Structure formats: C-alpha cells, structure tokens
Image 1 (spheres, rainbow, N blue to C red):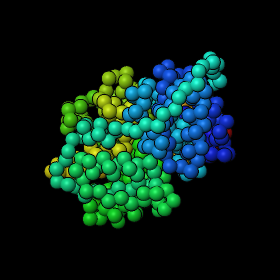
Image 2: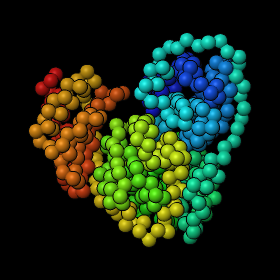
Image 3: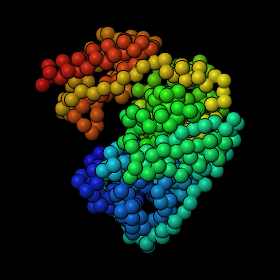
Image 4: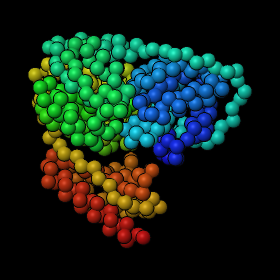
Length: 432
C-alpha cells in the first residue's frame, strides 16, 4: 500500500481493503470542519463498493455526503470547493486491480502537514448521523465560461481509456465548438492501459490521422496526453501548451515541479513571466502556488497543468479545452516545436531503501565538484548548462532511485542519464 500526499493506493483485496477505507476515512473526518463532503469515483470495478463504505463512514461521523457517482477527479475537486471537502475513489493511472482514496480539503489535496492526521488513529467525537444526497455538477458550464466558444470547429479525437472522462470531456469539447469523435469509451472494451503517459496510444494515433488533434486521459482524467500529426507528445508538452495558453490569458506567475522541462521555463521567461520550482508532486506544486500566490503551472512528468483560479488539481479536462482553443492560433505549431525541441529521459535503478540517503548524499558531493549548480530541494539536481540537467530522487514507495535527465541534444541526454545511472550503481556498490 502507498500512503502519500497523492492519496492512499493499493491492490484492492490484498494490501488495500474495506477496513483500510474505514480507518482512513475516520481519520480524514477530523479534518472536515464544514461537515460536508463531496465524493466521486472512477470506473474501476471495485469503485462502487468502496464508495458506499466511504459514504457510510463519513455519515457515521456526522458529515453530510454529496455523491457525484462516477465522475472525473477534476470535477470532484471543483465541487469540493463549494462543500469544503472531498474524497475521490481512484488509483489514478495505476493498473485496474488497484484502487485508493484521494482526500480534498478547502478545494486542494492534502499536504504534508495533514497526511499524518490521516495515517494515525484519531479520536472521533460522537455525532448525529449525516445525510447522503445525489448531486449533479455544473463543471462543464463553468469550464466553458473560462475557455469561451472557439471558432473553426476543430476536429478532435478523444481516447477515454475506459475512464471517468466518458461524458464530461467530449461534452465540454462539443460545448465550446469542437467536432468530437470518441474511442475506448468503456473499460471492458478499451484497447489500452489506464496510463496514457506510458501507453503507445496507437489507436488514438490512427483515430486522429484526419483530425486536428487527439487527447488521451487516464482513468480519473487528471492526466492528459496530446497526439498531433501522428505523434504522441511527451507529458511536458501537454503542460507546456497549457502554460502557453495561460500566458495568452495574461498570467505571469508560475510554479513548475523541479523535474519539469526547461523548455517550459524558458518559454515562460521569454514571454515576460516568472517561475518558481517546487518539489515533485501535484500537492507540492499547489502548496508553493498558494504560498507564492502564483497563477498557473504544473508537473511535467504527469502532463499536469494546474490553473488555481479554476481548480487546485491537475486539470486534464480543462486543459484539453484550453489546448483546443489554441488550434486556430497560427503560432500553434511553432509553440509545439519549441516544447518538443528538448528531450527528457526518465529511468530508475534498483537500490535498497535503507541505502537511499547515503547514496544520494555521496552523489551530491560528487555533483558539487562537477556541475555549475547543485539543487538539493528534492533529491539532487545538477545543472550541466542552460539546456541540460540531471535529477536523482529516491522513491518513497519502492526500492529504487529515479534518474531524470534533459537536454536539447538527444545523444547528450542519453549519455547524461546513462552516466548518472552508472554513478548511482557505483556508489551503491561501494556503500553496501
């Protein structure tokens, strides 16, 4: 089971069970000051059963439950702003046999200060039983109000991946003026896995051949991947396009995770904007956004564009509409080419967790003698030159160390990552 600020996740029936659902929801109840909570789920087979237990646990603790049913994560986040809290039954992009809980307070995911309160047993006062109400969302209209109607009737292929975006994403795109065709609507017949960032998206590439663009979502629809001209784009490109649109809207203050492409940062600065860098993770990005009163940004590794004005989460659905609205811009392909001009490679190496800190400490010392700048905000990031960097981070859930590298030269990027993996292995062998 994974227990992080991103939520509780595990294989349902093995390391994540209904007893766990009750335990964590009991603890979460102590954070719900409004005594109101929105709930929703993605399309995983275990979702309905878990949702019913979530609702019963919250009501037992005197919390009124507002049930959205099967609904994308961004919609639940949006509605949670109105009610004060939310729970999403989802394991995001993990395999189908997984499930989990995402917790929302004041419209944002829980942070590192609140996580211990959910993990450690809390004393609950006796309360009257809460009520349960089925509700609908006006998310589509609210998103349309922000995006506006677009001209040209762009042709768009949407790959649902069997997830919760089935109604919301196509309907939003149609509402703003797009011609939409949909593939992989149902989980039982989808031809790809739940994570579009790792899937080849071969069906979407075919389906979008005669379209202006293609969009693919993960199961709970906070992740978005773009297909354009027969090519699957990297998650950083999705974020970069969202950033480009927000610059057009007049936003200037951005937060990017430390592993987001340098192309996105350069683009922002060329347009007169400023950038702060956060630790990796959606919740860390949002936490820094709130502290710095930033207007937009996100996490490149997950294709996660975040627009706090609308939602304190990765916003795959809204971003698809924002990108669609850019298609008539004559500079669209130029923006896309710029975001594509950098190559980022993410890899990992097996390292026993008890050696993570000593290995990273040793590499930090080595980086300090080799690179012009070393950043220890989240792992160790070495700045090689203005176009190239390498980042080493320990996993909080696996016996691995992650290595990410980027450059505007593909061969150089491959060498950076390979050489760094060799250094990690050598340090690990010496320390053991």
